[in-house]
Image (tube, rainbow, N blue to C red):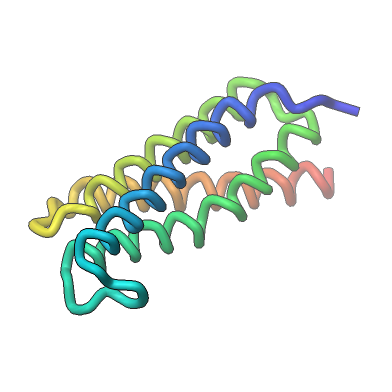
Length: 130
């Protein structure tokens, strides 16, 4: 059985980014004294959606990447996919967090995320039937 040595290098910083996004919401909630929802505050609304969007993509893609590594995908491919996901999620989080948003960060982040998702899914199907 193949051990996981590459993908954890990318999942660990993604976990740290998830914590940062979580703590940002907690800080905003405390400052605004908002226990639930966003109380109409644009910064809190964005922080909640950045966190939610991260949580909607990273677990599935992380699982796909783990399966690729377990199927002995070449290391360079795993590094490219892991780096694309990490950079993509960081760019998306940064871009979407800005109240005066620069869409280039958000769009580039989503393109990298979608590319990683598609490549991982296609790679798994190919490796499973060949």
